[in-house]
Image (cartoon, rainbow, N blue to C red):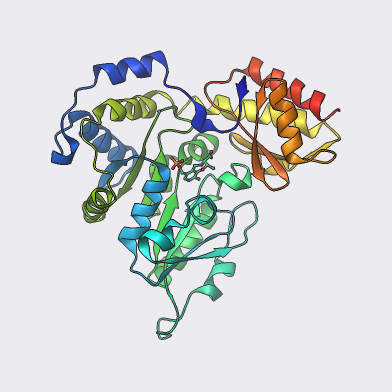
Length: 341
Ligand code: TLP
C-alpha cells in the first residue's frame, strides 16, 4: 500500500529507533528526564524562544497555548479552515471556555483589513473579549499553503495595536521554513506562543513542542499536568523528537518535490481539478469531476493507494518520508487509472 493519507503515518526509521533505544531516561514529572530536558533546550534554542515544553500531540499543544493565554469568555480570531476550528473536537469551548471567531481566508490566509473590524471594542463589556489572533502555517486545509511573511508581520502589528496575543499553529512550520528559506526562528520570533509537531513530516512517532517565554511555559507545564499530560520516563519518545529535529528537517524539500510532481500529473488529468498555486509544500487537494470523493478514494484503495478526504468535495494526498519518488509515480498512475485520463 502507498499511504498518502497524511504525513502522520510515517514510522520511526531504524536510526530513530536506535536513538530511542539508547535514550537516557528519568521521571519527567520531577523534570529529571535528561533526554526530555535536552529536547526542550534544543527546541527553545532552535525556535529562539526562552523555553519549550514537550507535549503529546499537536492538539494538546495548541489547546494548552490557548488556555494559558485566555480567560473564559475570551475570543480567538482564526481562519475558517483552521485546524483549531475544524479538527480539535471543540476543545477551545470545552477546555478553556473560549470561543473562536472564524474568518474566511484566501488559501488559508486572512488579512488585517478583514480582522480589524472584528476586534471587539474594550468598552463593550457585553461582548466577548478579543484576545488572540491565530495563524496556521503551513495551512493544512488550504493544501499546505504558506503564509506570506508580510501578512504575518502586518497581523503582528495589528495584534500589538489592540493589545492582543499572537499564536502560531506551526504543526508544519518546518515545511514553510524549508520552502521559503525563512528560518523557523524568524517565523517564531513574531509570535507570543507556538506549537509545532514532531510527528508529521519529521517522522517521530509522537509529540509536539510548544514554546514561548519562561513564564508562559511555567504555566503551560501546570496546564499539561492538570490535563493528565504529565509523562514519566518519556525520554524514549523525546529521543525520537530530537533525532527528527536534528536529521529530518532539510529533507522535507524532497517531500515538496514529490508533491509538485504528483500535482502536475493530477493537473494534466482532465477529470480532476487542482489549484496548482496552493501546492507549495507537501499537501495536495484535488477535486474529482466525474466521481464522488468517497468512491474515488475506494477505487484507489482497491489498487493499493490510500488517500483521504480533504473537504467534502476534495481528496487529499500528503507526501512524506516513507514514500519514494517511485511510489509517487505509481500513485499518479493509479489516480489516472481510477479517474480515467
Ligand atoms: N492534522 C492531521 C489531522 O488532524 C487532519 C493531519 O492528518 O494533517 N495543527 C495542524 C495544522 C494539523 O494539521 C494537525 C494534525 C494538528 C494541529 C494536530 O496534531 P495532532 O494530530 O498531533 O494532535
